Amino acid sequence: MQSSTPARRGRTYFQVAPLTIALFVFVVIPLIMILTVSFFTFDFVIGAQPSFIFDNFVEVLTDSNTLSLYGATLKFAAIVWALTLFIGFWIAYFLAFHIRNLLIAIGLFLLCTVPFWTSNVIRMISWIPLLGKEGLINQALMGIGIVNEPVEWLLFSEFAVILCYVNLFTLFMIVPIFNSMARIDRSLVEAARDAGAGRLRIMTEVIVPLSKSGIALGSVFVVALTMGDFFVVKIMGGGRSANVVSAMFDDIGILNYPHAGAQAVVLLIVVTLIVTAIMRVVDVRKELAQAR
Amino acid sequence: MAGRTTHKKREWTFYVLAAFFVLFVIFLYGPMFSIYVLSFQGPNAGLTFPMQGFSLHWFAALFGQARTGDIGGAFGRSIPLAIIVLSLTVVISVSAGLAFRRRFFGATPLFYVAVASLIVPGLVLSIGIGQGFTVLGLRTAWWSSALGAHLSWTLPFGLLIMFAVLARFNPALEEAARDQGATNVQVLRYVVIPILFPGIIAVALFGFTLSYDEFPRSWVTAGTKNTLPLEIWTMVTNITSPALYALATVTTAISFIIIAVSLGAIAMIQRRRSGQPKRKTAGG
Image (cartoon, rainbow over all chains, first blue to last red; front, side):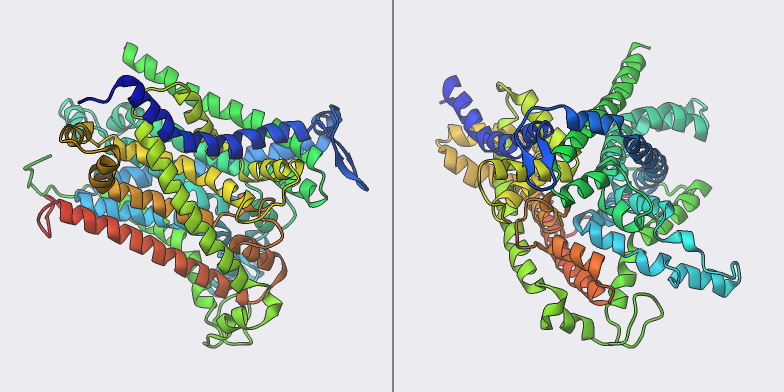
């Protein structure tokens, strides 16, 4: 009655074939295309031409602008990572440990995730009527009398960019951390409390270590999304700040795909290194914890 | 925790974190709702508060005149595209999720490619797909290159959701059906799909909304005709009137309807499954 092994194996490959084809055609080949195009020549008149030159990489790597682009990109990533981790951790902790009714916890969790299913561009522009020179926040500040002149750095500034990132990406921290915390056995917390551990020690020795995989996953998401953004920097930065992908966006505006390609290859290497580093930190610690 | 009915007094940390949570929710939703409110202003309105009158002027302007671009056309492309992406994402992710329960050659690399697709910046993939089409001499269009670009974003989410759902799925049910003489199709139709249905709705929700709102991956791949997020982007960079807010309100209203229907359907199925029409959870 059991289906024979070759038949079952055949069924497995049949089931996984569509995903394999879709990812091969729309992820693997495009990445190979980026690498290929990064060796092409570019001319403002005739555009990109097939070739095999390293000029684009030399240009990207020796341009002093590249350093400042990466400086800005990594600075945004670091600040946004720290802020989203702080906010995301406490929100997840509140939902997982303080809400006693499961249905309410799920409801509040969904409340945090609904914006994920709406447009990021729209959520970004939502800040404009609040942060502008005549925006709601400046009206309030001047109404109370805290400032006499409208605060100008609220909109079209690095502040606005970071605020937007935190607004858009914190839920990518909340979801995986909440997921890890929900799986923590509550009796461990009880046991720690019975053994005399205070609030702080329960946090640092039970909850944080057991949430680590969620923290790592959230960090990977937030760092990758922040480093891959261009439209928040473009609009909310008001042209005063730029990052790596927004420079690529400018490249393709003038159809300089080879330069954008070289930029993309370098960026992918940097992002991959950071992501691997984050995943490694967690795995090593997990091993240490198990060895103890 | 079962059977614990003691209502302990809340600690002070609860109140601090509850206040923090409320502030976070305001931070999350406050700006969004402020532009919905501002989209209902009168004809002589600006981009900020206070409200200048109340009317549906900007909604009429959105679809009435040509000067704001081709909004109707953008909806006419984005919604069918999202439905196609939804359908493909459901079929491909459910199918692959079932396969991933067993070991097979190439499972690990395939999983890594799916994860990489989440991490690679959308614009980079968009350029890659666009250049691929150029090399092959094909024209980029919303129903071809942009469709593929959207799948590269929705499929990894679909796969991860299926992993979570299938982790709680008992394969013995499938075996039992097969032992009773059910064919593969019958097992799928009468056992697997009904049990996985709430998860399938979740995959569909991701498929629709992520495609419908996708901007970076559409930038190079959508071809000459704009999808909705591209139309919004054009308005962001060109138009400084509440028409932009009106478009945002209409777009998000559609998203909210889709989200509410999906979550409502999942909740209804789960409630029906739990046997009683209303089940109280202990505590609270």
